Length: 378
Ligand SMILES: Cc1cc2nc3c(=O)[nH]c(=O)nc-3n(C[C@H](O)[C@H](O)[C@H](O)COP(=O)(O)OP(=O)(O)OC[C@H]3O[C@@H](n4cnc5c(N)ncnc54)[C@H](O)[C@@H]3O)c2cc1C
Image (tube, rainbow, N blue to C red):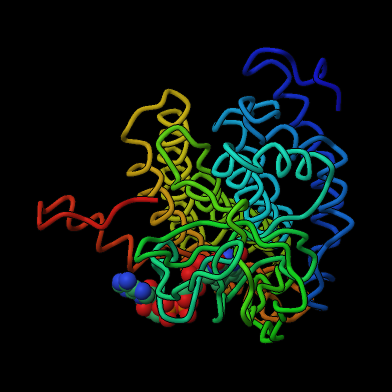
């Protein structure tokens, strides 16, 4: 994609990006069940996204990209997640790590990482670790000083797309403070193949072991700041919203086509009432998310808090929609060949990804009740 296609001012050309993603998503949706079944990373789809200019679009202008707005970014992730939430998850993590390294190492290697991102190299977030639970920005593992930087021995887990990653965004404690680094995986980084999961199988979010891995001083980043493009907080709600959209579409298709005693299931009143309930709550989750994206685009300080609430609601509604899909689908929706069961498995994963619904509930509840200061937002 040329810069002329995307445009020289924010907003111009974002439609082209969305159109291209929507075109690609048709094929992603058709192939999603197969990748899920095989637990295989959809590399072809991820490369097609890069070739369509989506990576260039998400990289902020200040680091050499085209600076997609938050609202368009949210639309991209929703489209992808409705088609194949594993592609959406890997891409969000890839964009999160790539954009973060371009921004956080801006004083040193930032332009190198921006160029590698634009060239199609793959990035992954290796942040969660066994001891930090859901608080992936609070690493417990200590990096010890060595010549040229610091040395990390430990583990990072559930690293989506790690098997195809050229670069990892890693955090560790340096002099007691959480510190970010870029790591180029070498023989000191090994993959422990734990990923055989219920849902989001094609993300292949493996466990990584680090054995005296050098965290190089020139690849050390600053702490994330208020002006950085917040890919992960803005992307995660959309993954659940896309899954919920897909689950609702599958439910509706089934209810309209399944004939029981000569009438479509869609004509049964209990189905109509239950569908009304989930559809309205799903629309509310989309609206809250849209509000958060608008706030982010206008640099309102409220946006993290709104996006946290949107993730919480989207995670829960996605599970509700998908569970209703299983009820409406009956035994035929329970068959492996049905998308209904896959949407339920995928929906469950949304609430596990940090911050989990439990962690978010604590933050939101504390805030509403004025019960002590919530932990810092990412
Ligand atoms: C599909 C998928 C993809 C992922 N991709 C990535 C990735 O690319 N990079 C990456 O770094 N991580 C990734 N993660 C990890 C994820 O973001 C979480 O950090 C990780 O799943 C937390 O560990 P756990 O699931 O074992 O839960 P645990 O931390 O063991 O949590 C168990 C329970 O305790 C609750 N809990 C945990 N911590 C707290 C707390 N501080 N306060 C209150 N309750 C708490 C949880 O909500 C949960 O109910 C991914 C996870 C999934 C499921």
